[in-house]
Image (cartoon, rainbow over all chains, first blue to last red; front, side, top):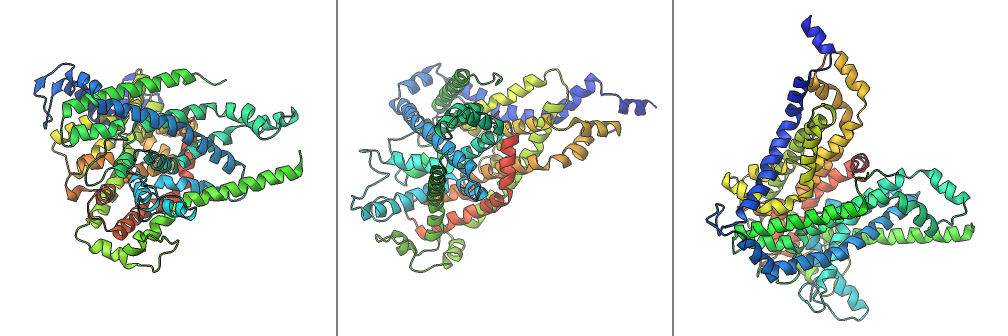
Length: 309
Length: 278
């Protein structure tokens, strides 16, 4: 009798707490172990001298931080990131929004175009970098870009090995655009499909001309939440750029001193020749702080979290 | 509105779309072209759209080459991607359900603690994570490559948002039948949530197959290389056999293209329901 009544009654508070942790516990524990503990360890390690070892040897206070901030290579990598994101964020945003607008208005073969633009998302940066480096933007002898330039009688360009002018930026930006635009296009498409058709009908009744006016006064304001999410994701992803820089610019002789985003620099500091894990940790903490500040600041600026009216 | 003008606009849009589509497909074409061409055709200064002859033997050459651990790398990538996908689906869906549906005083706080880790990008913690994994002795092991990647806050977030919108009537019916949380979850909630599992599974699988930094850091021995690490190692090595490299890259995207073409609609549906753009 007791069992039967318990089954029909909502579970007691204690039971709920127990079941909550049965469900959430394993995940939370893993997250603590593999995210929070490494973060805390990173902060701890950043105050120590730790060369070639994972156990801290000598307490050095803030020395790692000051030497990281005084290190031109690190500060240059932050500048690299800033230039990179200042370029890649708006470009990807505009391209993926344009693709979404065009695909959304296409009646015929909509699924086909959506698939084609989304398909590169299935490619890894490694594969894409290989195509870009060895087939499209190959420096001297062969390569699609130089072949096309040749048709117009233009000089051949050593795309990845010249810093004056920095052609490598074109290579790096196009590879990311190709890989990512489709994914953000899907986000925009989802946003566009949520806009009520009655808004467009009302605009037409009010005499708004289709095209720019409707885009500016109806579509873009309705896409605001999506736009904020896309911008945040783009900035965070730009900050984490690693794969294409590593694969496009390094070779058997090592890594060139230019175009180093922060993660690439940290990788070489912590795990490359130097094996300086203390210094690398300090850099990781600084980078995490910068990302947190930028993300929170941006979210505040856009008013993320406020309910849309 | 002027009909002619509308028609011109529509035609322009069609032309632009087709041109962009071709541009987006060119890299795939180059991958296949170079994968089936001879070394000479790839490096010829007189670049041609079609290679002079198709070399299907590049494929068998790739797998026969002892310098290239391609079969092993494919096996590693498959094991890692499958294990990561199944593990993530299990852990994140349970957590997402608990957060969404089991009333607990501190549920919101736990949720924010999970969400907060999305702000700290996983890539930034690679130095301390490497330290942790190497002190566990997991470097160059499948464990080291899989276990730390199983706890995706993003997947948990998607599941929570989805379960918040799950129809309560179904759960109530299960409750009346005397099922507890555990059995309600397995017998009622999971079978009725296949789309979200497929969507998250696909995204996680693609991410695991394509991930690079973590396998590069952890997979130090050749036997622990994933496909991505193996490819990257060829591109940065001194002696490159280009046709082998390209056919290897082409082989490496086949599993994903298959997953992708079949499950694309789930990804779209998953994104739409994830609340990622809300």
